[in-house]
Image (cartoon, rainbow, N blue to C red; front, side, top):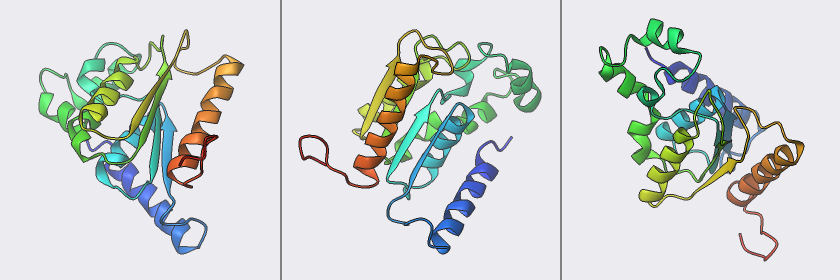
Length: 179
Protein backbone atom coordinates (compact mmCIF):
# COMPACT_ATOMS: atom_id res chain seq x y z
CA UNK A 1 0.00 0.00 0.00
CA UNK A 2 3.03 2.22 0.01
CA UNK A 3 4.67 1.01 -3.19
CA UNK A 4 7.79 2.91 -3.98
CA UNK A 5 8.17 4.73 -0.66
CA UNK A 6 10.47 2.26 1.14
CA UNK A 7 12.22 1.38 -2.12
CA UNK A 8 12.87 5.08 -2.73
CA UNK A 9 14.31 5.43 0.77
CA UNK A 10 16.60 2.44 0.09
CA UNK A 11 17.76 3.84 -3.24
CA UNK A 12 18.50 7.24 -1.78
CA UNK A 13 20.28 5.75 1.25
CA UNK A 14 22.48 3.80 -1.15
CA UNK A 15 23.16 6.91 -3.22
CA UNK A 16 23.95 8.96 -0.11
CA UNK A 17 26.30 6.24 1.14
CA UNK A 18 28.12 6.06 -2.22
CA UNK A 19 28.49 9.85 -2.25
CA UNK A 20 29.68 9.91 1.37
CA UNK A 21 32.32 7.27 0.60
CA UNK A 22 33.49 9.22 -2.44
CA UNK A 23 32.39 6.49 -4.86
CA UNK A 24 29.81 8.69 -6.59
CA UNK A 25 29.80 12.34 -7.60
CA UNK A 26 26.64 14.01 -6.24
CA UNK A 27 26.59 16.27 -9.30
CA UNK A 28 26.73 13.37 -11.78
CA UNK A 29 24.11 10.82 -10.76
CA UNK A 30 21.99 8.71 -13.08
CA UNK A 31 19.15 6.34 -12.31
CA UNK A 32 17.52 3.60 -14.34
CA UNK A 33 15.89 0.22 -14.47
CA UNK A 34 13.85 -2.26 -16.45
CA UNK A 35 10.48 -3.80 -15.49
CA UNK A 36 10.08 -3.22 -11.73
CA UNK A 37 13.37 -1.32 -11.87
CA UNK A 38 11.68 0.97 -14.40
CA UNK A 39 8.63 1.38 -12.18
CA UNK A 40 10.95 2.33 -9.33
CA UNK A 41 12.85 4.72 -11.62
CA UNK A 42 9.55 6.39 -12.49
CA UNK A 43 8.75 6.74 -8.80
CA UNK A 44 12.23 8.06 -7.95
CA UNK A 45 12.15 10.83 -10.56
CA UNK A 46 8.78 12.02 -9.26
CA UNK A 47 10.33 12.44 -5.81
CA UNK A 48 13.72 14.05 -6.46
CA UNK A 49 15.68 16.03 -9.01
CA UNK A 50 19.09 14.80 -7.78
CA UNK A 51 19.61 12.64 -10.85
CA UNK A 52 20.93 14.22 -14.04
CA UNK A 53 19.41 11.50 -16.23
CA UNK A 54 16.98 8.61 -16.02
CA UNK A 55 16.34 5.56 -18.18
CA UNK A 56 13.15 3.61 -17.67
CA UNK A 57 12.28 0.46 -19.57
CA UNK A 58 9.25 -1.82 -19.74
CA UNK A 59 7.69 0.05 -16.84
CA UNK A 60 4.16 0.78 -15.71
CA UNK A 61 3.07 4.32 -14.95
CA UNK A 62 -0.73 4.31 -14.71
CA UNK A 63 -1.55 1.20 -12.74
CA UNK A 64 -5.31 1.02 -13.29
CA UNK A 65 -4.82 1.01 -17.05
CA UNK A 66 -2.90 -2.28 -16.66
CA UNK A 67 -5.55 -4.06 -14.64
CA UNK A 68 -6.22 -7.53 -16.01
CA UNK A 69 -3.45 -7.33 -18.56
CA UNK A 70 -0.46 -8.89 -16.84
CA UNK A 71 0.04 -12.12 -14.92
CA UNK A 72 0.29 -10.24 -11.63
CA UNK A 73 -3.43 -9.54 -11.40
CA UNK A 74 -3.90 -11.70 -8.30
CA UNK A 75 -1.03 -9.94 -6.52
CA UNK A 76 -2.38 -6.51 -7.47
CA UNK A 77 -5.84 -7.43 -6.15
CA UNK A 78 -4.49 -9.00 -2.97
CA UNK A 79 -2.40 -5.98 -2.08
CA UNK A 80 -4.44 -3.10 -3.49
CA UNK A 81 -7.96 -4.44 -3.78
CA UNK A 82 -10.05 -4.07 -6.91
CA UNK A 83 -9.34 -0.88 -8.85
CA UNK A 84 -12.98 0.17 -8.98
CA UNK A 85 -13.41 -0.43 -5.24
CA UNK A 86 -10.12 1.13 -4.16
CA UNK A 87 -9.49 3.64 -6.94
CA UNK A 88 -7.91 6.23 -4.66
CA UNK A 89 -5.08 3.88 -3.64
CA UNK A 90 -4.46 2.69 -7.20
CA UNK A 91 -4.20 6.32 -8.33
CA UNK A 92 -2.05 7.38 -5.36
CA UNK A 93 0.55 4.75 -6.25
CA UNK A 94 0.71 5.52 -9.99
CA UNK A 95 3.81 7.56 -10.93
CA UNK A 96 1.85 9.05 -13.83
CA UNK A 97 -0.19 11.14 -11.40
CA UNK A 98 2.98 12.93 -10.26
CA UNK A 99 4.51 13.33 -13.73
CA UNK A 100 4.46 17.13 -13.37
CA UNK A 101 7.23 16.75 -10.76
CA UNK A 102 9.60 15.07 -13.23
CA UNK A 103 12.39 17.36 -14.41
CA UNK A 104 15.05 14.71 -15.03
CA UNK A 105 15.87 14.04 -18.71
CA UNK A 106 14.24 10.65 -19.25
CA UNK A 107 14.87 7.99 -21.88
CA UNK A 108 11.88 5.65 -22.12
CA UNK A 109 12.18 2.22 -23.74
CA UNK A 110 10.07 -0.85 -24.32
CA UNK A 111 9.15 -3.71 -26.57
CA UNK A 112 6.38 -3.21 -29.12
CA UNK A 113 4.77 -6.56 -28.23
CA UNK A 114 5.29 -6.54 -24.47
CA UNK A 115 2.26 -8.39 -23.06
CA UNK A 116 3.43 -8.04 -19.47
CA UNK A 117 3.81 -4.27 -19.45
CA UNK A 118 2.14 -2.94 -22.59
CA UNK A 119 4.05 -0.30 -24.52
CA UNK A 120 1.09 2.00 -23.83
CA UNK A 121 2.76 2.77 -20.48
CA UNK A 122 5.90 4.06 -22.17
CA UNK A 123 3.83 6.03 -24.66
CA UNK A 124 1.77 7.62 -21.88
CA UNK A 125 4.84 8.70 -19.95
CA UNK A 126 6.52 9.99 -23.10
CA UNK A 127 3.49 12.01 -24.19
CA UNK A 128 3.06 13.52 -20.73
CA UNK A 129 6.72 14.54 -20.50
CA UNK A 130 6.63 16.02 -24.00
CA UNK A 131 3.46 17.93 -23.17
CA UNK A 132 5.22 19.33 -20.09
CA UNK A 133 8.20 20.38 -22.21
CA UNK A 134 10.60 17.98 -20.49
CA UNK A 135 13.63 16.41 -22.15
CA UNK A 136 12.64 12.90 -23.16
CA UNK A 137 12.96 10.28 -25.85
CA UNK A 138 10.91 7.15 -26.57
CA UNK A 139 12.42 4.02 -28.12
CA UNK A 140 10.08 1.19 -29.10
CA UNK A 141 11.77 -2.03 -30.15
CA UNK A 142 9.81 -3.66 -32.99
CA UNK A 143 8.67 -7.23 -32.47
CA UNK A 144 10.14 -7.38 -28.96
CA UNK A 145 8.37 -8.43 -25.80
CA UNK A 146 9.15 -7.69 -22.12
CA UNK A 147 12.81 -8.50 -22.62
CA UNK A 148 14.78 -7.38 -25.64
CA UNK A 149 16.04 -10.65 -27.15
CA UNK A 150 17.43 -9.78 -30.56
CA UNK A 151 21.21 -9.26 -30.18
CA UNK A 152 21.30 -6.24 -32.50
CA UNK A 153 18.56 -4.57 -30.44
CA UNK A 154 20.27 -5.50 -27.17
CA UNK A 155 23.36 -3.75 -28.50
CA UNK A 156 21.26 -0.76 -29.54
CA UNK A 157 19.72 -0.55 -26.07
CA UNK A 158 23.10 -0.60 -24.34
CA UNK A 159 24.53 1.98 -26.75
CA UNK A 160 21.55 4.24 -26.05
CA UNK A 161 22.17 3.87 -22.31
CA UNK A 162 25.76 4.98 -22.74
CA UNK A 163 24.83 7.86 -25.01
CA UNK A 164 22.01 9.12 -22.75
CA UNK A 165 24.07 8.98 -19.57
CA UNK A 166 27.08 10.30 -21.44
CA UNK A 167 25.15 13.34 -22.58
CA UNK A 168 23.19 14.18 -19.43
CA UNK A 169 25.36 12.81 -16.62
CA UNK A 170 28.87 13.20 -18.00
CA UNK A 171 28.23 16.13 -20.40
CA UNK A 172 30.00 14.28 -23.22
CA UNK A 173 29.92 15.69 -26.72
CA UNK A 174 28.29 13.73 -29.54
CA UNK A 175 29.81 13.01 -32.96
CA UNK A 176 28.97 16.56 -34.07
CA UNK A 177 30.69 18.13 -31.06
CA UNK A 178 27.42 18.98 -29.30
CA UNK A 179 26.59 18.15 -25.72
